[in-house]
Image 1 (cartoon, rainbow, N blue to C red):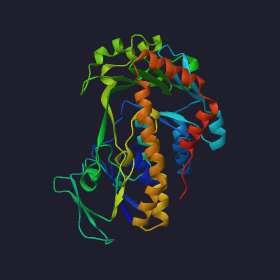
Image 2 (image 1 turned 90 degrees about the horizontal axis):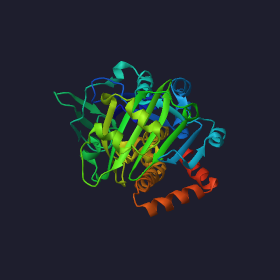
Image 3 (image 1 turned 90 degrees about the vertical axis):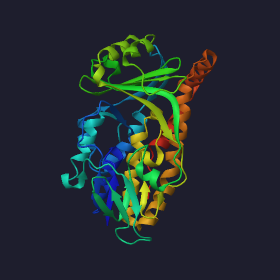
Image 4 (image 1 turned 135 degrees about the vertical axis):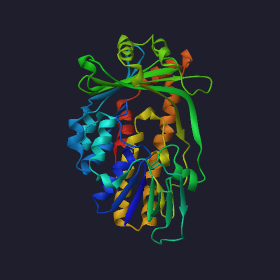
Length: 382
């Protein structure tokens, strides 16, 4: 069996590693000409870290990241609304939430594959079925410049705007949130009490999150709702947008060079009913792109890698894809749904609604928050 993976993001690379460890040949096609350090961080939640532990990558990842002790949702002045300690989950699942630079994680994953297994500079132009059924080499992959490959099995790990999904699957509704996100990584000395926490502060139609990802390295993100559709907003205005926040927020923004700040609109994929057909299956954002409001986008792709590798080891391809979808779809779609709602609630601007929201968050029993987190952290079993 040989599996071709379209996309060398976190999900695609993790899937390739998981398949290789089961003796399955892989080829990974990536549109970028090389891996470049992206100016962003990532929090690998306990569910993702369980997968990396199974793949033997836990130690290297933790050595290059920062273990987190808690997650806080706060008001703009960093007064807590919700405070979730991770100690209980660490004991239950045996893993730690870990913050790491996304580029560092990508390099760690890429190093576990042979250079000959990753085809850089290959942006998929089209995918075409050659013959029906389970015949070998059932698909033609075209990457432009007369570069073509015949493929037995294809996994579309090519993100929100997946070429694989757009070519073969009818459901392709991308939803806009009307929220703009700025992200950056900067050298900054966080106060000691904040160095092992993920903090997200909520204001009036906006929010700001930050977490340490290495020695004097802070990853931050800022989101704001705008009434009109936008492509990008001026980075120069960013400090004024968050002027009413805690002073540490202003200092983090000021410490970040403008060329290290990246701007994007926030969107997701409206849940689709089918992730596979014939010898093709969607994984990660190509199947269930979510808004980043729960920090689970990459984590859910990492879970996909674990489950689909187990399925392909135990079943024929079409059976494996059906099993994978049945196991993963309920949880992934719940994450998409909850993340969408969570992001909208975080940006309420009506003062009465915000007061009600903040009061309810403070009053929420710890047992409820614990149950919701446990559902996220628990891995499915094949």
